[in-house]
Length: 598
Image (cartoon, rainbow, N blue to C red; front, side, top):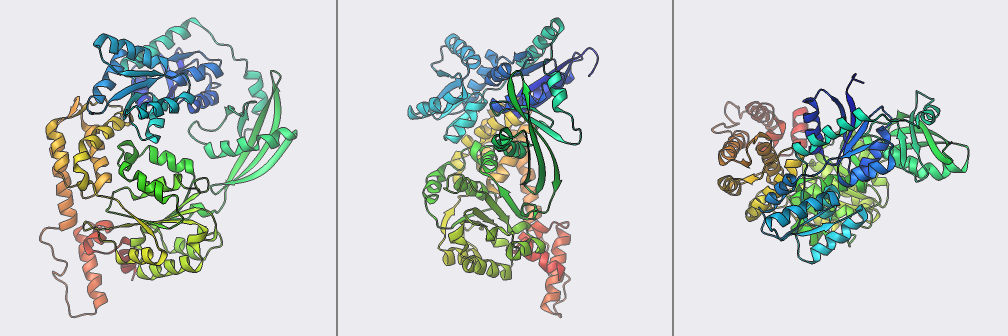
């Protein structure tokens, strides 16, 4: 602890606030800040894990601050939302033509009401007092025809799940700076008593073990785990609480994601209540999920990835929602087809999370990343996901399979009756002509696959202004920016661009533009420079000006020798970039890798 400094535990509901808090703390010499990201119950749980670490005070925002104040003995300072914070969000919302409403805890809506009264804005304002009210309020607004809400973090997450556009009302530098001032003033005039010290000394008696304590409500009361780690083991321990309460001491072993945990539990009384204490150690063991190219995901994993992705933030998947809902009600395999960067994996995740098998794992098998060892594991090992039942198996990039493996995979699926024992999803990359690769059509025809064709971004150019503004709203949060939009000329340049790599490229360029912009609006000149560099890179990578791989290649040899020289000539021209070389030669990366080995 730094002498004379106030030790502050910050709980930010979103990553952007964490960045601002850290930046402002570095400019002060009277505080020592440790800040973590967590909203509502997650934020309260983080506070419970960490308030024992000699912190003097906790700073958080909105409903999260209220929850933390109810469960920890430390004083809590709430970061107030200023009128300017709300006005900035309203100005962002004015980029859209649809009606919007303001939803949040009283700390947000009271200031919003004052601002709207002063400016004579007719905006519907809905006040909530707990997370349980959020969904009903948002559903009511949706029925009234609203498509946009200005809100706090919990309403922001729920709105996206319900198909509503959302702009998060963020706290600016002034609001966070004022909270720091209040924290310092309060701590200078008050001292804190720690009644838990004696209890925690009794709990932590084995330095070689991690320790987690649950209270009578099965909430984490104390943990030695890192604040942002341990979620899988925490969930497993919570399920072990009934067994731990049944006896004085309980011991078990759990295999979680390839790690073997040895767990011992006991009860310790505290203020007349029984607290369950778990001590555990871990060791790595061989497990299928560690195989290269094979990944096991839970519904929570997939939802977190999807709801924080560009495709959800911008609603890019919205036009396919009805198709996805219909196909999840069948047992037929599904082939997802689209150009590079059109969001095939996100669509596969959406299908999985809405299917009857959503509570079983999603197994992602990426053939573009698969080597010989992992292929052997997949096709010949007893622990292969092909030997399991009632899972969703997503076979990704089947177009990258060499011919022999393509035939073997198709044979395995048929012979093992895999499509009846599991839900199968496939994806393949098609060219700009939209034609499905021949080997992918063999899967479609042989397995009677349903097909989903994802449109390229160039066919949705009229939606680019909406996509850009929604993406900018999300990027403002992640990059701690306050950009209000794009200049008209800048938007026209984005709409006119061809986007050969579709949404993946669009997201990357928007991220770059947001990161380098220091003005309230992204300038036309900035977009022009960025797109010109993009065109130059595409030309250098894909076309290679006047180079011909046959230059200097003798044709008076075997075909294998000629192929070998052409491959190395293309690789040399492209600086050793194997992905670009495979694309130039019209073969998969796996085929290129195999030819280089021969």
